[in-house]
Length: 465
Image (cartoon, rainbow, N blue to C red; front, side, top):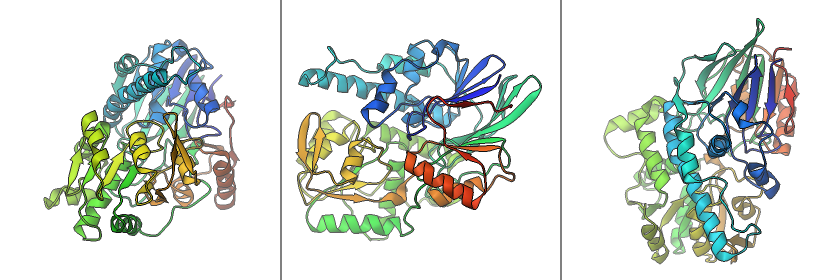
């Protein structure tokens, strides 16, 4: 019997994993880490509900850690099949997975030093060696052309417009002469955004698994340029620094593009800008190289030869730890951009510890902040931030600029779903916190009149029934 089981990204926006079974074969769509509250993070440590060695293949929608970050663990625990991804996704994973492992090893060492772990000794979820082992299993697939994995599974990727290489996957499932097309949206991107193409429409599907991250709201329609300019100018006026927790993949590049445009228009002064993330620096190189994902507008700007669209005029790429620490000595206006985007680890935590207590400074939250993350606590008005065991007073301005989200909002997801020419048998809403998914179910039922289900963890259905 064919079956699809929800092993992640249900009731939450993280941990994407969908097990597709047919003809005695198993295909896992995405293999992400759970992030956020401790009960969710604990799932990363718990035994996977199925034996990893029984999974035949993994296929990825895109490279973000909540879609790929469990790969080193699943390979360590026995998965021995190929991991299918397009070139950009594979190259991004070559940066993200070792970095994720390094951060976990680093955090385990810091916890050991501080002595506040209940585990003796504290261990990382996986190591850099585990990440490298996972990367040896990658096999490159076409960016948009269909490819056949086995008699049971054929996959056709389409551009999702979310980050470099991001795809929605149309998977044709075949068993005993029956077949069905199931679309996995991955993360649906924005329309009319800098750098990347719009999400590509898909015509038909029997079933759709669609993300609902922002299913309960629309992003602000006011200009993101004006919002960023206003924050930068008022912080400069009071002599402070701007700290931007930014995802290394996508968000850093978009923000650098916006800052450069604002400088070109003379809407903000030219400030020292520190990209304090070796991974983000390397990712920017990939964004420049993979031109197949570039929008026409961005392509024209690249070809104009007038300026570098992904760097500010006074950019400083800080790769080493010493270079990162030296930023602490700067007491004049500057912009510091560092990962992670939800403030869950990495160098950004050190910059927040240094800059949060000063009311002259501002922290720009320019992306989704998952439940239970430090970014969410700051967004919700926390007066104290717990960073590496210390309580840090929050006196800096906390500014949310949600126009930069790489996820489509309620209207944009409806726009993407409206590209389907026929009503599916069922739309499953995934990758959303419960309030967002519930709200979006009502929107879809009202506007599209489709049958909608919000699955729970470990729910399953038969796509060939």
